[in-house]
Length: 237
Image (tube, rainbow, N blue to C red; front, side):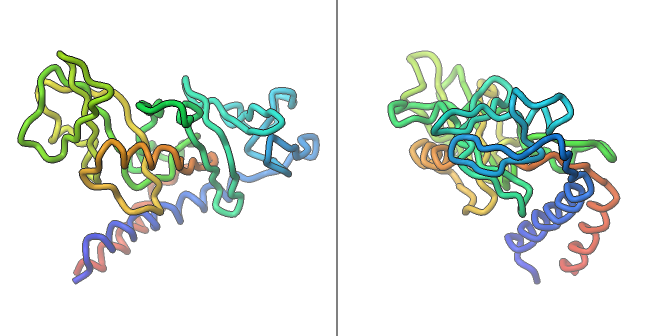
């Protein structure tokens, strides 16, 4: 019998293989879009761009903000530092700029839950996190008791509002949502790190400070995913 953890890993690696193939199909280089330096990064090229580049260079959503010491990117309403780009892995690393050493009680600002299995056929996907799980923050009007998944976040709670963080493979499942609680925030957990299960807020913050990977743009092919998953299912028999 194949262990569930191994199957989960195979599923994830299966998806990555298909996504990487989709990325490879879409890679191109425009000679009018030369590579550039951005903070500590050198030879930055597609899919990234600078504000001064012509409209046809790179993706608008992958536009970098450059200073002498840092490279950053805006994703939705938040700014993230970009310390590294992995062209062979078609991904780049991001760290929330709000996660500085002076913020002792940070709340993540990422708002793009992983949705690998919910894409439409042949659609292009941008800024998708390369993650295997996430930590979900909930805001509750009542104190949650006798539920080991709900780890309290004392520094964000008040006398009449209770904030909790949930971690693990099912942390974003509606099945575990208490009636008095609602979504507050979430942060991806790096796919190549051990999945945090019922982790404390301090452990989640430690993970947040290390950052996570985001994929280059890719085109999703549902048939390829289904074929790959069918191969994996045979391992269960």
